Length: 191
Image (tube, rainbow, N blue to C red; front, side, top):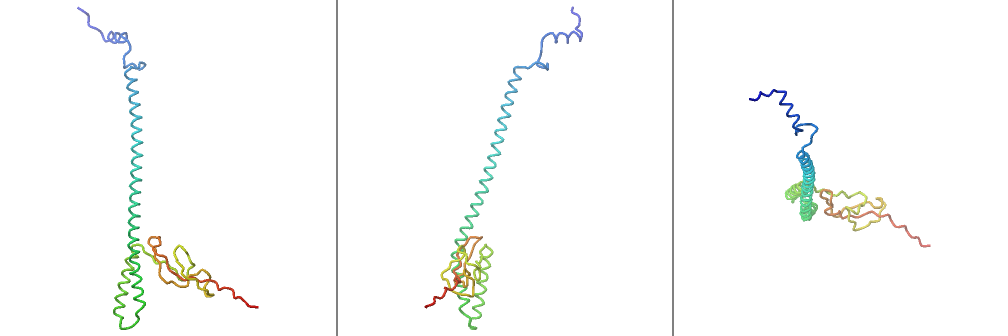
């Protein structure tokens, strides 16, 4: 019969049997391969994360660009439509200027009301009247059809608006047709 093993003897046998994976100074070959695999997976994860961030940024830029293009296209179409309404606005202005006869007062009030409603609707959409009378001539917003020699106004000043001009969100729909002041020509003396 063998004598029961004492606790001290069992730990002595384990130490003599050689190093184990639990020993701090010993590196298991499977553990180093596992560490390499973990490092590789972490690098792959970081790469995928960076790709995801770039794709999200690209998508957000695409979304913003598409929204801006849609908004610009909407404004372009609306501006084109408003250009077709400008002759109607001109017709109302001519009709209102033509009849001062008291017999037409009721009709005039109706035309004024319709004109006012049309103008307010266009203004809400972003249409603005280009101010021209008394302003310096600006070829970007005015179209001069005549230069008038005068000493009343400084040279290059708009003295009369023949047809109003309009802009839509800062873009000229139609330039104002104007007459512009010119300095009088020096009189030639016959000697």
